[in-house]
Every structure is written in C-alpha cells, then in structure tokens.
Length: 356
Image (cartoon, one colour):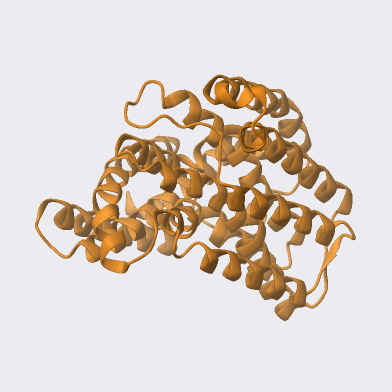
C-alpha cells in the first residue's frame, strides 16, 4: 500500500498512527490530563488532514466541482464529532464557542496568515474580486440567518420563548440553502483549476485506498473526539482556561486543520484565487451545514440541547469579523499588512475569551 503513497503522505500517515496510539494510551491509562488533551487535539488535526487528502484523491475521479462539495460535506467531520461528544457531556459553552470560533479562525487567523505569508513572499496578490464578493455576501447572509434566533432572544421579542423551535426552523432553512447551492457550486468549480495541477507528478491513490482511508479516518475521528472531550474538562481546570476559550481557539483550530494549512500553502504559491476560495468556503459551510446539523442532531444524540442562541460578545465579534473581511477583499487584492492586522484582531478576540 505504501508504494502508492507519496513521501509526504507516508509521513502524515505515520504521524497520525503514532498520535492515535499515544492518544489511546492517555485515554485509558491514568496519565496527566493536559498531555491527554494535547495529544488528542493533535490527533484530531492529523486525522482532519488525512480526511482532506482522501477527498483530494477522490476528486481525481469525481472532478473539481464534486470534490468541492465533498470537501464541504466531510472537511468539518472531525469538528462535528467533537461538538457532538461535547453536547453529550453537557459542554454547551464549548460548542457555542467552537462554532463561532471556526468562522473567526478562518476569516481572521487563516485568511490573515495567508495574506501575510503570500504578501511577504509574492508582494501584492490579486484575485477575482467578483467571486470574492459573492462568497463574502453568501457568508454574511448565512451568518445573519444563523444569528437571528440570538437577536430575538437578546431583544426579548415574543420569539425569545420559542428559541428551540426558531433554531430548528433556521437550521432547516440554512440546510436547504446549502442544498440549493450544490448544483451551482459544481458548475462553477468544474471549469476552474483545482490547485492539484502543481502536483500532477504525484502518485495517484487507487480508488479502494482513497475510499478506505476516508472511512478509517472518519471512524478514528469519532473515537478520538470522544477521548478529546473526556480530557477537556480536567485540562481546562489544570490550564485555568475557560470553556469559551477552549472552544473558540483550541477546538476550532484543531477541527479546521485542513483549511488552515492548505489555504496558507496556496497563498505562498501565489494561487490567491484558490486560497481565498478554500479559506472562505469553510466558514460558509460552518454556518450552512455544521451549525444546523448540530441543532437537529442534538435531538437524538442525548446530552445538552443546542440552539442558535449565542452570547452577545460572540455575536458582535463574528459579525464585525465578516464585515471587516468583506470590506478588505472588495478591491480584489491583498497586502501583507492587511494580513498582519487580521491576525492581530484574532489575537485580541481570543484573549478576551480567556476568562470566559
């Protein structure tokens, strides 16, 4: 099997195997909770990267457009599992912060690092401003729809006492919007270079290997997510951090490892259009798919109910971040200083949630 894998793939697979073994030991042996927490978080990031590689290999058979849809559906799989187990453990604040943190992490931290690295290496980077405006507009509208139950609750409207029913309705609408966007996403992406052209000489995985790797990493992600949540509460106490910070920063970054790495690499290669698409489509899918699924799945998985009602500071930061990014990309170009500013804003937001 290893003969069909590139050196990078073999290294990533070896790292993932070692991390899974280490995380398993720390889960079932009484070892330091912080070590268990760190190892399981790193394992989730490694498994997320393997999910991304498997989807890329399947894309060689399915085409760029279908690959984009598949990536949207499966790219956030590790984070979905983490949030489900967190709900089962009653860690609602972690889930709330993780959903918003995934959006903030991509639009501020990852996009900022992409602008910073790409700008320092390639100078001013230009991208399709029309396409960027479409993605940012969709992201803004999706975030608004996702946050409307919060607004109704905070303003004490008559709908405030029906937060769960309103959340379910909003979740269904958001999922329907995602379904409606699939055909146009396939058509739009089908004519675009998919970023894999730079790797034409890489060994292609056999189809059974790609499907098998995707299935195995998906199952492992479910197990490791359970271990991660098991270690989360003791680690929070030992590190003296809040549930909000753990969800906003740690869970969000670990669960979105694929977009974090790939987007910055693409910007460094001066593939600004593709980098922007990868980075901004991830928070769009958080709002359209992940958050609505968590609302609906919370009925059946047990544990705490999840509704689309977030604390005021989370609401304010995510709306401000999406508006700021929309303003920055409207001119169709980026410079390294804009990236540095986005990363700085993310740092201040993360610090403000350290205590809760």
